[in-house]
Length: 225
Image 1 (cartoon, rainbow, N blue to C red):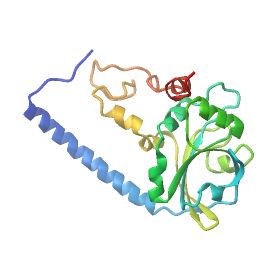
Image 2 (image 1 turned 90 degrees about the horizontal axis):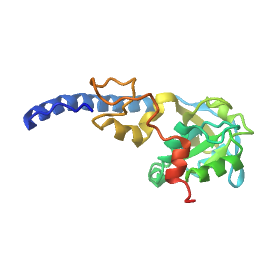
Image 3 (image 1 turned 45 degrees about the vertical axis):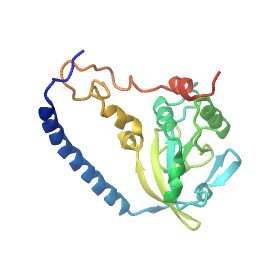
Image 4 (image 1 turned 60 degrees about the vertical axis):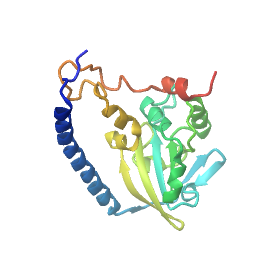
């Protein structure tokens, strides 16, 4: 297996400083993007009723008294034994979300699957987040996560009884919202995926092959059997 070149401490620090300048520039750009995000206009949402563990619930009540709501729309295949591995792995990393209370915000999962099936799946893979079903509502389709469609991340703002949609992303836009890729990207060999720009001889394998699939998540985090 190839290794990075070995240099003395001074040479290492020189190259690290050059990289740090780019990292700091990226941080400032992310700050600027976040500032632009805070200035986005918003879209008023109609009333929706989803289904939670305790039955039907209005979208405005899912805020649970908070003014801001983050919704992850989890992909759902009604014929699948295991649901989307990427969604399952991503959402398994979101634990200890109580810190959002200090920001007047909440994060929940919404899926097109029936609530009984969704809750059973969550338990199977050890997911402790709050889940809601939009199986009998146009909500998923209206926020770019229709039945049979992909995953999405949406953010909403509540003003009294009125809900507004403020932000949306999907695809790799979700990456920065989990710590998993950030940790792997600081490793010397990175994600080891064949699409990435890596030095010659670095270990590489097909994209996604290092990701946890749903059975892996259940084995690692699900209830003991």
